[in-house]
Structure formats: structure tokens, C-alpha cells
Image (tube, rainbow, N blue to C red; front, side, top):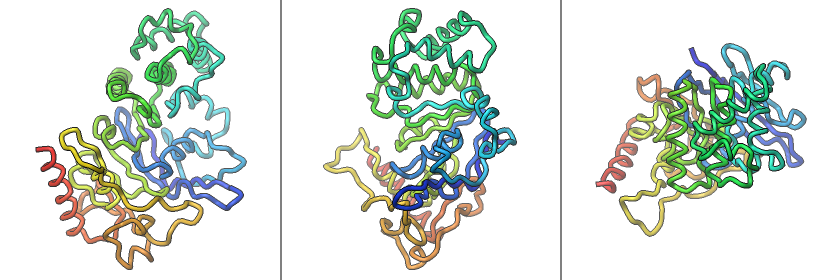
Length: 340
């Protein structure tokens, strides 16, 4: 049984210019102990999807529909008090920018102990002991001293570790990580990813990683959801997405990956820009940028259907299966040739 099952999730925002369809019919699920990666360009709806699940969008300007079943209960219709008991305890989130997510006027120890005491019936000294335990677990040097430092006294990588510690203090069943390695150097990125995997093994948590970096997905994810213009265009096991992607947008993401084993003057890029979510194009939303566009792509929105008889791998594209399989094989062969 899935720990979290999202079905036909839609999140629209009221603005002065009209209704922005930020998330438009997204479905996925994640099981305990597994890692799901959600990838796509900036503005594709990745973060809004997770903020909706966490109940953190403004109620005044947001229109939400669909289902987000957490252990069988719909988070979208849950009362505020019940949701507060779950958020931070059963579901925790590492936000994209730790500097703006941590309170700059409070020491990190105070913020950690507050998160513990909010959900547990423990004394202040017990909460502090738990905070020290987690700071040590995430690799903060001299935690007994650094616990009384302010956020600005930590480096970017150390602040990210503090955010991970804060998310894990109550042993959540689901950890949502929004761009956990953004703006970090390569070495620190590797350390953060290794840390997340180690803590997942220790606590048995499910992890939902939001990123535009397919390298991160390849490193940590079991399943992948590819989003474009607020919709899911491909999803499946990570090995199959990387070995036989069946959506031109996914081909573009894979083809634009920089490589350490080959030197090129320019990276391959997907032409054009993502569409406005105020007035998304009719039919397939990727068709204005797709080199394989057909007339049907401009008229009909493709359904997310299984690839051949594979029930675990889905793609939304009007191209025939033979063409998709051939082009995917050509892309992967080219990437393998560059690596050899």
C-alpha cells in the first residue's frame, strides 16, 4: 500500500492577470522506504505540488482539487489542527533555501528543540539532547558548541544539514526535499545526497526529491516523475526512464546533461521557453518546442499511457511506440559513445 497517493491534483492561483494553472492533473504515489524524484524545468509545478501536499499555499488565492491520500486520509480536506499534527511529525520538508527557511534571530538549537516539543511530550533538556543527536548525525562538527550558533554563522552546506536535522527530529515517515543541493558545491552536494540515503536507511523514511538535476535523480531515486508545464509527461522506474525514455521532453533533459568525460563548446539545449500557465497551448503543451511535432499534437492533449505492455512506465506523447523506442535508443547510444 502506498504511503502517499496523489490523484489528479490541481492547484490554481488567482492573480490580477487571471488564473494560473500551476499544477494541472498530477498523479503519483510513493511507498515507505522508497525515493521518488520529481524533475523538470523551473516553473513546471514541482515545488507547488509539494507545497500543496504540505498545505502551505495561501488559502485566499489558491484553488485546489483532487486527492492526496496520506495513510488513507485526504490531506486536502483535512482540518487545520489534524494537519498541524501531521506536518513536521509524519511529513517533513527540507525547503529550497535554508537561509530564508531558518529564523535568523533565533539560535539553531532553539529552532530544533521547538520543533521537537511541538510534537512530543518531552522536557526542554530531552529536546536539546535529541537536537544534539541529530546535529551529530547530519555531520555538524562540534554540535555541542554549534547548537548555540545563529544560522548566519553556518556555511550554506552546514545550513542545509541543519535543515535536514530539523526535518528528521521527529522521525517522519515522509521527507520532502525541495532542491536539496541547489547552490552547493559539487563536493557538498555529494555529501548531502549520501547523508540523505544514510538517514533513510536508518529511519526507513520515504523521500520525495524535487530537482531539475537528473544527475541527482540518477543518484538517489527509485522512481521518477517528469513534469512539464504543470503536468506529468513521463513517469516510471529510474532505470527505465534513463535507459528508454519515451517522451521528447525527457530526451531533451537527458541530452542537455553536462558530462565530465567529454568537452563540447556548447551544451545541447531545448529550444524555446516553457509556456505561460495563464494560457497554456492547446494539445500537447510541449508541442511549440518539440522537433517531432505533428498536427495531432497541436489539437489533442496526449494521455499518460503505459509504454508497450509495461505497466510501470508511462509517457504522454502522440508519437508511435516504434519511433519513440528508436529515438530513445539513438539518444542513449549517443550518450554511451560520448562516455567511451
